[in-house]
Image (cartoon, rainbow, N blue to C red; front, side):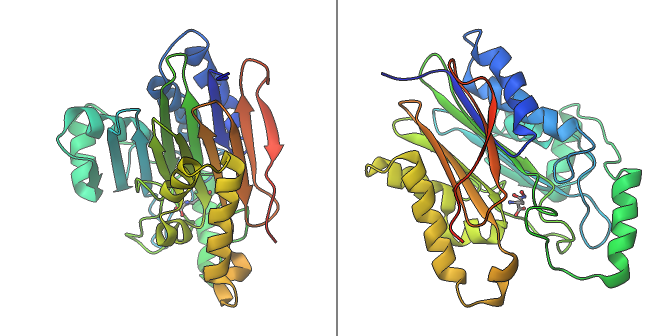
Length: 294
Ligand code: SD4
């Protein structure tokens, strides 16, 4: 029996995001609207420090955003290296719906967003400006596990009509090089779904997800019979194998969430500290600590 609707999203801020998504899903609404509305809560929240407004800036003090969205027809839209727009997920949806393309970046993405009526805003808050100034003192690029990179919101939903959608939005790795793009706007790395099989999304050090086509692999493993949990675990193990023995492993964290067409869900991460929020008709929006490898 298929359990639906279901919504799953990353980290503590998955709770308010799920709440928003659930309003749509529990009223028979579609998964695409649910994931967009859901992740917008994290984008708008200045205390969520790796998404949208109040996200940590790059090494030049600029807040640059990555986001993507995908629906049950394999339609997808994405923006990367976008500045000054509070809701990159909604720009990504516009790319999907209003252009013949999948991905817009940088100046072009900003120009498109402004043409679509999005407002230009300063996304650097007093708090993140201070954090940047403090970082400049040492200018040390060593992300602190589960802290500086702990806020990307990825969300997956299965709606009453048995359709999947997913969304992912972030300001990326803090203190990244100007122009760096992570996994979050890359279909297949930060997010992927196949409406016949299931959906997967990621959080953590984006380079690792890009190197392994992480989210696409999780979906493909589910196609070959793995449960969502087993599929997430297998990809995390592949990542571990790649980084084992390398200095980068010391501060590497990655985590995946996955949801299949039966409404079964699962998650796995490299190190302790990653959690996700899940809501179904029988689970009332609860936070779960993911299992981990090391
Ligand atoms: C990135 N994956 O840009 C993002 C960062 C992240 O939780 O997920 N933080 O690499």
